[in-house]
Length: 156
Length: 261
Image (cartoon, each protein chain N blue to C red):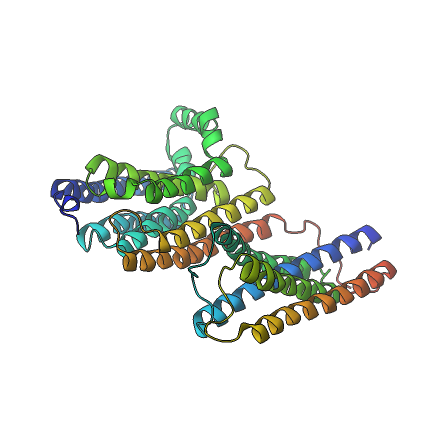
């Protein structure tokens, strides 16, 4: 396989992983925090218009990302170019990125809704965002490794 | 309920009549065309006919349900809107009615239809962006510009709104996952971007309605209706997205089989 092939495949592996990461984070957010725990609120009275726009776009992207990611994954498999390291790196960066955006911009800056109500928010906010940051850092670390290995032609 | 919403029995009867007549004619026409193709030795899969009939049934239910059950219940209205504007188009578009028409019509007529399908206005209207704006824009007008209230008291407006929801829904769905002959569709990434924008507009409107009820709708009804719109829209868009990705997956199948390593 040529080197460009390999690199293109790696890019698509990262993309598939990242999209699934975003989709899973969005799904967990909706299922666990909105529907099961009822911590998050569908609408918070302090939500401004721009918060609704951000929520709408991210909600839409979340759905599409999860489905697209799985089809991309199937495509990588049938082409026999699935690279687990790149894929997992993408997944962690995607999930962490979504969660960090949700935890900082959407919860705090846009005040879409809070993580939980009638409790001291500080530990919740820190746990939420630190977890997100850890996922991003580990993901980026894996990504660097994946690209180094791909450059040597070894990640498969 | 304000009384001006209720003195419109004639309008309701008219809507019911339309909801029976239009799908009935469409179903008979489709089945006849499929029969004609088969008699000439052509092939028309039975499941496309089934999809068409299911789509028409969905559209009819979408109109008849709210009319006959609880006309002014916002949640019922919203379920009807999802069925008419999203569920029915998914089924109808997948039934490929224009492909069937092209095969069933005599050659001259089929040529005319093919020319029509590639005419300039059709090309503009079937562009995903135009279809999405027609679709989402219509919804925003309906619920935020006071149309919703007038719709329930004026028969022609009621029919026009339903026709618009159904047609705009069809155009949009066809622009994203259509299988009928059409002017060249934009690249997948453009269509993906349009789907995201449309779904976002749908979600934003749903949450907006949750707190800003249209005139004539109570606060609790608006909340219930807004949630139905948000999550129902998600579910139907999930189907749209899955079909879209499936089409991409099929089309981008690698041509040359790699040697097993």
